[in-house]
Length: 139
Image 1 (cartoon, one colour):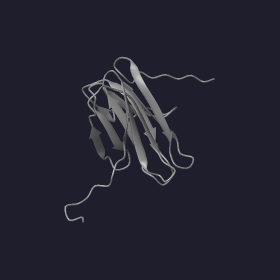
Image 2: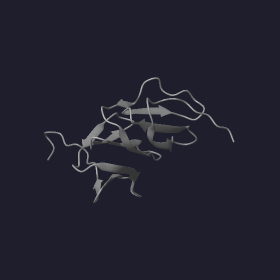
Image 3: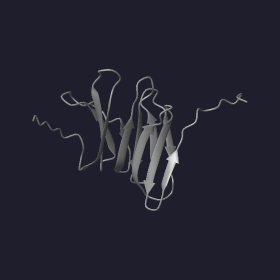
Image 4: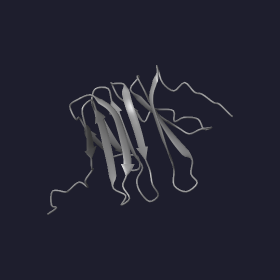
C-alpha cells in the first residue's frame, strides 16, 4: 500500500469527497476544513495552488456528483447554515440557507440525469431540485 499525505488546510479536515472524470480521466478530490477552505487535488498530483472556495465558516460536509455527458457538481454545507451547489463546469453557484443547522449534504443525479441535493438537518431532510433559470422574456 502506498501512502501519501499533504497539509492543505489550516486545522482539521472535516469533509472529503471525490469524482472520477469522464472516461478514464483522473479522480478529483475535494476536501474541506475548519478553515473554511475547499481544496482540489488528485492522488499523486500537486493540489491546485489556491482553494476552490474560502468561506468565513467551517466546512461541515461535501458531496460531489459527476456523470458522463453531464456537468460535475459539488454540494457544500457550511457551519453558518449556508448550502452551496456549485456547477463545476460553468462556475454557477446556487446558494440556499434552510434555517436549522446543516449536518450533511448529498449531491447525486437521478436515472434521468436530474441533479438532486439532499440536506440533512437535526429534524429533517430537505431535497433541492435546481431548475434552469428563466430569462425575463420567457413565457
